Length: 92
Image (cartoon, rainbow, N blue to C red; front, side, top):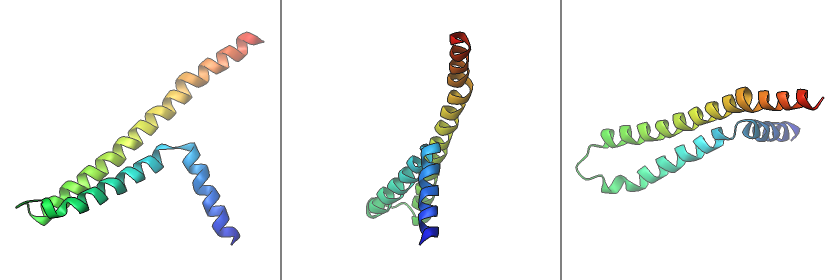
């Protein structure tokens, strides 16, 4: 049971470090679920084309979330942190 607790805490720790990964996963599953529900109304579009569009939309959302996460972490590392360091030096 301790392995389960360690894995759960590891997931929560990773989610706190990079919150855009769970957002990307949630968006992925939301898009896939929506597209699967709308499969009945696809008209005369082939099933394979519909599935390809669903995959591209879901992957696009995940890549977008990851990109925003990287930009956010770069902002924190290269803009916010140097400002805080500079303020700390000025206060001394």
